[in-house]
Length: 160
Image (cartoon, rainbow, N blue to C red):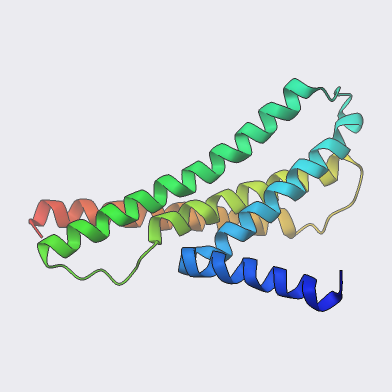
């Protein structure tokens, strides 16, 4: 296969994904990349943890990753319900996939934390600021979700 053919395949694939998911495309792709890296580093770290690798644990790990994708899908469904409800009530919402993006960012942070733990278990030194930075981002994402929940509850109470 020529290099241009491979580039065309990737461009087409990412174009279709971007077209389907819109603003959610980049977070979803990052979740998939982080899932793959976390799974690989988890496998590599298992001997350092004196853990046996078996098909049951591997399948369970893959199931957890699939459930992460399903959580993003649930967030997207919630977003669509909010958009539909707001359109019916005449309220204009400035977002399309807010809940799904927050869920994806939270998952990405968890995956990065897991990757860092796997790398540390293999004896690799990581910069001291990295893990606290990711944990801080994760807590900010959680606060964003809590703020959005509060805003929705407040609108419900106000009858908007």
